[in-house]
Every structure is written in C-alpha cells, then in structure tokens.
Length: 280
Ligand code: SAH
Image (cartoon, rainbow, N blue to C red):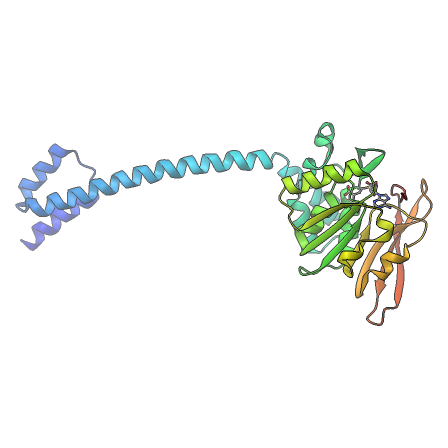
C-alpha cells in the first residue's frame, strides 16, 4: 500500500500527463484522492512555471534591448581602454574602470559619434575640444583620487572629464566659461545620471569658492601661469594637474602637490597641447 501511494505521488510530480492518462493512473493506484490532490498541485505548478518563464523571457528581451541602446559602443570603449590607455602605462583600476563605463559617444556632437573612441581630441563647438582619451586618463591618474574626494574641474567642455571623475569620487564641481557649453554639458550629465557632478557657468580662474577647499583640482585649458585662487582652494595634501604655457604652442602638463604645511611643489610631467584658458 505504501509503495502504491508513493508510486502515485511520483507520477503526479514528474509526469506531464493528459487528464485521460492521469485518470488511468488513478485507477491503477487505488488511491484516487491523493493522486487527484497531487495532480492539482502539479497543474498549478506547471501553470506558474509557464507564466514565470514567459515573464522571464520578456524581461531578458527587454533588458537586451536597453543594453543594446547604451552599449552600441561598448566594445569600442573596451578597446580604447586596452589599446590606448592601459597599453601606455595607466594602471589605476578606478581610472580604467571609469573609462570603460562613461559613454564618451554621448558627450560628443552627434556627427562625431563614430570617432568618439579614437586616439585623438575632437571638436565640440565654439573652437573647443574634448581631450584625447589617454590625456584624460593620465590627468585623472595623476590626481591619485579616493572615493570620498571632492574635485574641482576648470573647463567643463563636453562634460566627459567630469563624468570620468564622477565615476571615481563623491563630488565634482566643474566650471565652464562658455555659457552654451555649460548648459549642454549640464543637460547631458543629468541625462546620463551623474547626480554628483555640478556644472557652473563661470570663469574658473577664480575657482569655485563656495565648494572650497578641494582634495584635487584639474584644469583642462592652458593658462600662462597657475591661477593663485586655485592654489588657495587646494587642500593641504591635495593635488592639482594643469597644463601651463602659451596658447597655440606646446605647454607643460604640471602636477602640483600641496603638503600638509601648505607648501607646494611642482613636477613637469610631459609636453601637451590644450585650448587656451580664456578670461571673461
Ligand atoms: N574637460 C573638457 C575639455 C574641454 S576643452 C572635456 O572633457 O571635454 C577646455 C574648456 O575649458 C573649454 O570648453 C573652454 O571654454 C574652457 N575654459 C577656458 N578658459 C576657461 C576659464 N577661465 N574658466 C572656465 N572654463 C574655461
């Protein structure tokens, strides 16, 4: 008897039988009530499995669609990080990961999208450029950032450098002197979800006093000398990276470090070419 009821339970759970077929099984088992209950459970389960499978398939399909929309350039981005950035000696994993994430193609003019991950700067309008990916990586790595840092950028431009910083640190304040670029970058960064990046339309020569002092400062246009307000707004122990030199010529990328006593030292990193630092 025990063996028979066990056999019935086994049938109900493991066979996807038609009603007629189950009826026959019930007679064979001599314990129709038990089998019937089990059949009900089994049918409900099957229905649930079917419903959840449909929901699952739809969710995966929808997810793939969304991924595809943001990830059309995913492999270009990985190749950019591998071939242009890691290959040239950038090691900081937070920088490499940030640059694998930020959709650079979303921050360049639409007609330049296909070139967004190439190894050179690109025009972004108003005579300005988005920096070459390697230079963005190098300057970011030089700042030696921590997740809790607050960073000031002077020269928002496209917003790309600010987004890379925003992936790494707690808060980014960025100033742009050209109003329409500031508005566009602000809109783009909001659209892409960078809530920790604040764009200001202002002359970055004066830094941004309200948010000072900063753990790090990055300047992406070339002044003839280091603006004193920027040095003042750098925290003791902080770093600033800035291209310094005459516009239209090669400038020096300078790393400034402020020690805990407030004294600064500078290191000449390499020759670079940036757009001019302008004044209101
Ligand atoms: N970091 C930018 C690079 C933009 S190019 C990016 O990722 O795209 C440098 C930008 O600095 C230009 O948009 C230029 O208008 C801006 N700039 C020049 N002088 C400035 C100043 N005094 N204050 C703020 N922005 C300035």
